[in-house]
Image 1 (cartoon, helix red, strand yellow):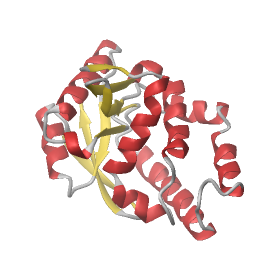
Image 2: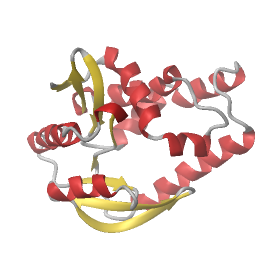
Image 3: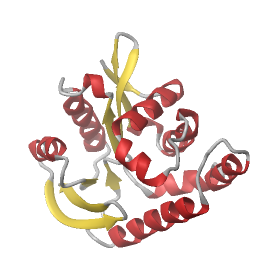
Length: 201
């Protein structure tokens, strides 16, 4: 079942994120952050635009999610309102998040570089910001169902276009996006390498 995500789904979504993107986690963190720590990010996303968060549920278990905001700037506003940066500093100081100064600087520098490098290329406000399926449930069409639901939501909101970024090596995801009308329009980069920029009108 695909349904609107709510606050109680955030921890499950955080665990799915950690399981689905191990390369990114290993790249930035000395040890993986806890799901509770990642939940802070998802909480901010939910506050920014609650109706843009959807989950896939199987036997009362959340096994996938998608977040598709109509306006990415809302997320930054919500982050400021939630004192998001201060919470991460608190977690670092109290030892709940193990991250060296070098890793912290690399993470911040990388994300800021990515944002500024990408923002002037094809400036589209609506995004498929994050989508993931639990590894054991991948290949069952859940990603397609989540994406279809998110795009229906964006269509109802009458956005002119929607944008996403995807790694060039993620052939399955690229194929899925192309089947929904996304087209490659450019590239951007971060410390891990290239991202393809794809847009759907």
